[in-house]
Image 1 (tube, chains in turn cyan, brown):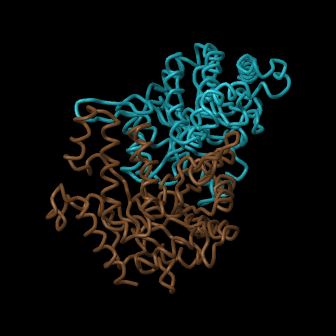
Image 2: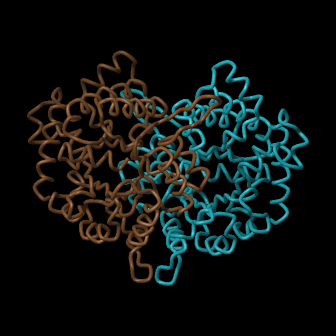
Image 3: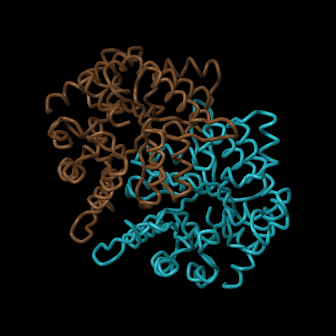
Length: 305
Length: 305
């Protein structure tokens, strides 16, 4: 799977992923209104509006980017109708040739992690038939439970040529509370990073592993260290843009080959129409605004590579 | 919320929760067959069979226990139809007077954790209407991202009188890989436990907090230490039964008042019919087997209190 991602990144010269995190406040009024007029003030109406929103953004950016990253929480908050639209978004993005990184941050004990893995990146067998229930290409995984919570995901990656990104150093302000605590003089995130490198060895796909890592753009100095600690891991880098990470901060997340990292922006792209300079597109032009913001982001990141 | 749980525990004299973790291999053949004959080998058929299974187990045990704990992974593996049945199970259990602990182990950065919190234990406003999309009473939360990943859950607990159990020391074999690492001479799980106690102060409900902790029965000596470190936390204890924890191991998870812990068993109850001595009930008697196993579990745990 990681080779497929690399191929797309090279083809589009864009180590960039658009985060499809449709907060209610991001949705253009007119899109929501169209659905609530049809279906009332319901979870189904909001979910349908989200789907319209996502489709337009995917259509406007698919030729520029290798991948999208829907954040499942933003769909799960609207219950079952929201999750149906999460699944529809995965399918739609794949139909447009995009790789889908499901930002699900799941992680549990063995058999339970196995269930998450099968449901998201694997296949479930029922009698004579097999199903890929959510069918993302790659998902994010929480490492707090240790190897036996991560191994079921790795097994499923190997069976189905899929990938995972394991949380190592997250982009949020209080990520250091536990992740930075020193263990034998070294921060926990390094210990986790080393483990990710070790897990990744059993899941290689060319020169990179299908087991990658998540490291926030907001911590560039840690990114530099983790880059060296995990040379064969692709790093998914959140925190660019709205959270404060800049292109300059990103340089050291990449390997000397110009590969090894993929940078996410969510609200900076999908809610671009709400802020200058992209507010010139107006609410109706939200998808064009997303395209313009994506082009600028790609240019910005290329400038440091 | 925690007072409501305590009231039910006292009324039933049972600090016990039945884990509704319907692995496909646990489902009685005849239940699955009934649904696949109607709907074919589909995700919908399996999901419907799970719902029948859960309903029968809830009906057979509701008068004995204060709460059930559906493990969302076991539903999510069957995609959207599975999650619909998760929601239906939550509703059905609540209609029978049970408290529902959603074992979701979510955790993300601020606004994203907020979305999970609203969707599971909060309310989502759409125009003039409000919805409780999943509507569990309590959910489990992963602490790896630190305070700003947990605070949104606490805020929602305070707004809606709900609860959370934060993962501190999990029951699985490799939980020690990160959780036991020493930080200034003390294991990470103690650092997390202290933080849980601190978070809990802003969320008190009588003498206990609506912010509780998860500590595995498989690590009784750590349970003893964590009990003292978090005197106001209710501890959700997985790992009894199938995972190896015994009643003797559980004593020190409780406070001297006989309160402070609630013990989960999943496969030991819901798949009891597959193993001696409960296999005497046969497959058709799976719910009676679950009831008998629950009675035995309650007796076993009462014996050490």
